[in-house]
Image 1: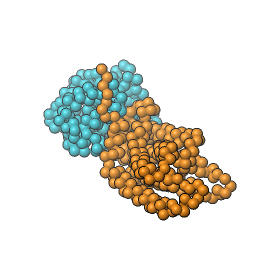
Image 2: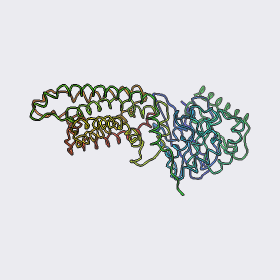
Image 3: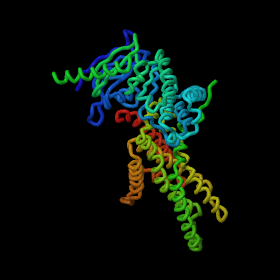
Length: 246
Length: 255
């Protein structure tokens, strides 16, 4: 098992979210191992890692749908979390508009009509508003999942493989949205599309076997996709070397 | 200005319930069976009427026909509730849509199980409709005790509420729809079979029966509306619903 790593991205400000020595086991498998992470109030944090590294598990815990096995997740009272899971799950018998209103009801929004209409217009869901979710293409499923995550104006946005299935124009719109949003929102994004995500990242965290392996900040200058890949590859190589010697 | 939400969790639950073709098929088949049994009872009652009239206090139409009809209706509701409310949470778990529900924070009167409970109580229309229709037709030929019919409707309401709440609690525990139906049917059938035991009844009331819904349901059907039975059904319903919510909170440790 990896040695636990402590990562502080707050630069001496109060953390919005603090994962305190978080471990998570399910069915005898360790999904997360002693994760110690302090997250700032804004910025885009990219999580990289192979399949099964624990990226989605970490986001799921932060979304509050699962419970840690040990450790604590502390967040400020002002934290409003929006979660875009992967894969996006929908009710087959509900339409796009009904999904949006249902989510608005679950979040107890005060003004659901304007919130739903605004997001449906922004993400071009009006043209499919009466479609059943089971009839949507992957791209529209992603739009719906994103729009549902954005209801309630979250200041912590958890995005799990958000760019899967997005067409070029949607991808462009999504990237413009993220570059504007990350200035006042904490965005945690797990992805394998390094080239697309690299220029947006303020911080990059490498995960492996449920643990935080390495991190780097790119707030001063954006990083290119190939440089991000080298960082990922080198981090893994460094870990493998340590494993051999230990 | 605040706007109201046109599609809430309660609406979603109603759509989930009535949008399933299987529910309509089951209700249609069960209505046919119940009505067929009722016609047989009516036939037998007509044949026995000359003999019954010789008795000093012959049974009324309500006692002879509507009472057994109500007893049949609640037995039928065991199956209906098992395949509807009994699968409600387990289907959410199986399809992973439970994640949406678990992220909500709502007051107790708008809790997840309460919203599902309210939506599933529309199932009550099924036994009520059959009972009232039968009573109306019988009233054309004889005297129907409408107060007793009201008591029967109350009994069906309370017992169905109790069963729906219990089915919701059971369905939280299971993540497979098929197993959820089976579990509900086994538990419901167990309760009814246990209540049918006449062992040691010669010594008085079997106290186990007092813990089961059947005895209280029968008392209410007969028009004996006692506080103990009301407390049993209302308290029991609230208890099952709170357990369902408690169980949901602890589901996070399993997901």
